[in-house]
Length: 400
Image 1 (cartoon, rainbow, N blue to C red):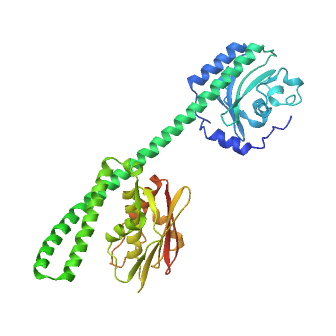
Image 2: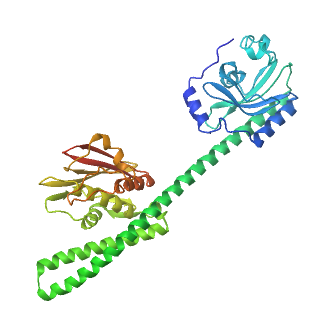
């Protein structure tokens, strides 16, 4: 028996085949109608729609037989998809050196005629065949051959449509998951933050009135800073609530922004100890981004860098770069660092290192996982490089 031929681009062909998710997908009336029609047109009892992977030939539709698959090495269709022809006809397999000793010919099946049209997808890969076969010899007319080719094109059209539908369903599900994530995050965070912020604003304003009467300029400056920071945070919360009502705004509502100005706004929302220095990018840059998302991402990274810094003189350095596709950020610190075995785990939901920060508080495990999810929605990513005791650098990308 002749060896089953193997394409040079077999790996690519198999990848294309698997992208349709059609193997073992069950019977479908549309495909069965085509094999029934092929059998009737050719006046041949058995008609198959087959797909061929690395080991087997599987029948999506099998008219005239209960068999649903075959070994690839015994398959006539493997030769058909390798032939490079628009149809392969084997009038008498017993006289063809490729099939004369094939068990499908010499065994109980006794195949005496075969004709198969390769199913060529839009990228040029032969995925399988539409074929007819019998235990008697036949001679197909020109009209029957052309009809088989037409039916094969309809099979390809159906599987292409099937793949497009599956792709669309997957994209819709991913979008739904993203919207649910954003809505849940924004609603939860906004309501948790807004009430204490409103209290801080009222008490700060009352304190400012008293300090104005006392003419204590140092304390007045601190209160003014407190009020400004609170206003910024309240503005951020209002934006988050807006996004929670319409999550798609996170992706669609982008604005031109001055990077360093935006970073200073974020820093104003964070309590920065006197022994921590924050270094901004040397050159300023204009970015077109979702401001609310960027603020959330940077707030978390800066807060963590400050909270988990135990050095006498700490620093947080923000580095910016970009290429044709992405904005790239690095947030580097000289804090306590993260052991290598946790570099992936820290981005998991609710994962914590079970350590306390400089304020003797433990993390919730929500922050970094939310940052990763936000970046994922925006077609970006985040990773970390760290040495325990020496600090950590977070690398974030944001799709332009």
